[in-house]
Length: 79
Image (cartoon, rainbow, N blue to C red; front, side, top):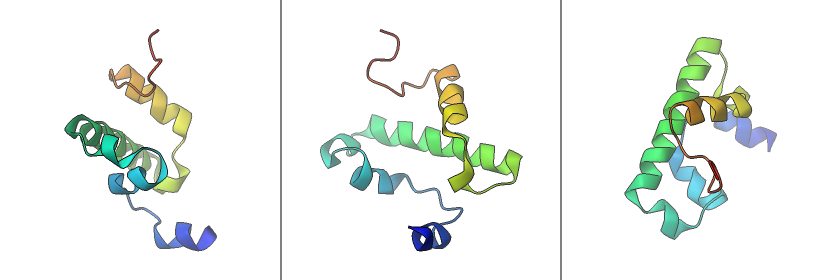
């Protein structure tokens, strides 16, 4: 795992998500790509401001920012 982190340090890749988190059929839909792109953009801004790499992004903070920007991050959000 450490070798993977070193090789991919600073890379924002929304395409890797389908192999890890969601079924391929779901990620093929345009809204899914837009949501992933939005999250990647916010994460990129966070790393720029903090001067860190993407692996050091604070996920709870990222999620809070996304929710404040009206991003749905959970199927049960708002219920």
